[in-house]
Image (cartoon, rainbow, N blue to C red; front, side, top):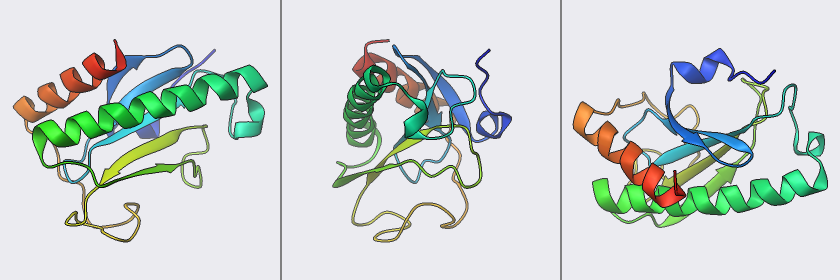
Length: 139
């Protein structure tokens, strides 16, 4: 049975469900940031997905990128670059980060991981970011 690793629950908010992935908004206003978690029990690596599942995941990453850009545009400034990463060193459950970057963001040009402290969303911006993500993803 699929369950979201508890580590995600304190650092992100649920957006909804795509065909393959559970989608979460990272709770850090410094970066527009979505996390895709394929709903496959025990999956840790891309190779744990069947070929068709990998195809679906790639399409979901592209859709998440559009949502990240839309969040950035609406709440801050346009995204200059999308970063897509699948690390899993800390949380081994297969998940993909889709992060919007700007030349003036808190970590530019370095990685977002381990860069300063997260800045939580206020209620209005959180509601707006979730609504934008859901609308852009068609949820």
